[in-house]
Length: 527
Ligand SMILES: Cc1cc2nc3c(=O)[nH]c(=O)nc-3n(C[C@H](O)[C@H](O)[C@H](O)COP(=O)(O)OP(=O)(O)OC[C@H]3O[C@@H](n4cnc5c(N)ncnc54)[C@H](O)[C@@H]3O)c2cc1C
Image 1 (cartoon, rainbow, N blue to C red):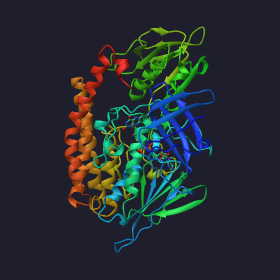
Image 2: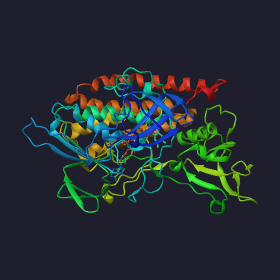
Image 3: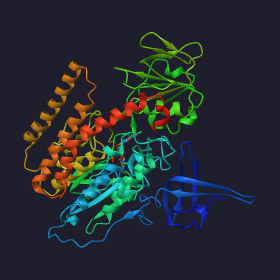
Image 4: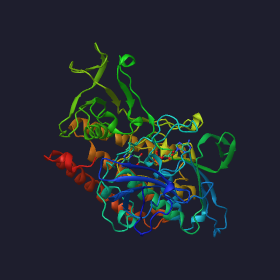
């Protein structure tokens, strides 16, 4: 018998609604349960286990009341506030693809407008919940409707960005968690809850006119008569004056292949399908790629009992002093050998008896639903070509892409972009410049980025501070535009916050490295 009691002291009356409960190896427990048809996922900080002859009760104290992200969208999973518009002109009709952190930042930006009802947002979300990649899904490949699974996080993922450097200006962790202490690096459930908590708050602001369509994947976008026609569910079409693509870029794998893979006698997978490191307990693993995913996956496997983890690098070794059980090696060249489980490396060395190869080779920007002439084509970099101010389509100022950059400054990026996009839709910024001027502005940023890369290569710097500075300057540039219109009250504070962000981030990174360098680091870190 499981009984759930919540901080308000009310035990769950109907435990049949408990869907699933998992005891993680971390000192946290995750419970997923239904309450009034709303799915809750909660992480318990304390669990009291009482056993007697007849039953086993576990009394769980949650960090807070059931997740705010268990927002009640109603039966049809549509949430629309009725509102009376105070503006004389009809609201701008805006379609949005995706309700992850970017889409949710748009809801917040709407709520901060002088007249929130001047914009009508329809957000199409293919998952059954908002939250983007922060929604965990045990599935890989296709979901129950045959759509590609968006999730690429694993069960025991903790945010790799410290909360002190990844906080919304208008909604603190303290506010969200009601003053309760939380660690710097939050488990993914709490990050998701925090992000959703602010969106929920924004939904409640008077005049906000947002319709979130859950379980509604965009299949096709066409341009007709200057309008965007969006098709969902096979045949349902709707027209919008503006379209914002906010469908993320961390779910379609960029796979690599190496000679001999077809005959490898073990498992080969991309990190997008990595769900639980326990699967690799006792195994010998080769992780290809030492970027963020490679680093995280290697540590997870090590933490959950892998016999040995080899982590390959392409250009340079990371600055990490790895714990026992992880070794950084030159890149993979091919696989084969007598047992079909030997990995041959670039320096001529070999690793035998490898059980699994995990490709941490990144993700692709993919927008299959967009028409060819409006489809963004870019790698993961700090300034994608073709987007004016990093968001507006060069030839069509009514089309926007959000969050498509390589993200170094975290959640604040989506907020700043959302402010600019809202003001642009309202005709306040970015509408006067012609195509040539817009193109010139993009070129200026792209050249600046190339310059940083050239200097970095010359001086052998790893580029962390340079990349952070570049993104900071880009965000301050778009905030300066917004500042002129003063549509949002607090953009100036955001600008100032970004000024200190780079130093704060560098300090946190140094702390992280120090912890890793110290003897007991694997005990102390939570990654
Ligand atoms: C393994 C991993 C770890 C990460 N760790 C961190 C971290 O520690 N800190 C951090 O700040 N960031 C982290 N990130 C980055 C993360 O992507 C961002 O935090 C954030 O989720 C990006 O928000 P987004 O809304 O732009 O994209 P997403 O979160 O990807 O959301 C896009 C949304 O669009 C929806 N969608 C896609 N296609 C369609 C369609 N055709 N129709 C309708 N809806 C659609 C998706 O279902 C999804 O909900 C991590 C990412 C990964 C993959």
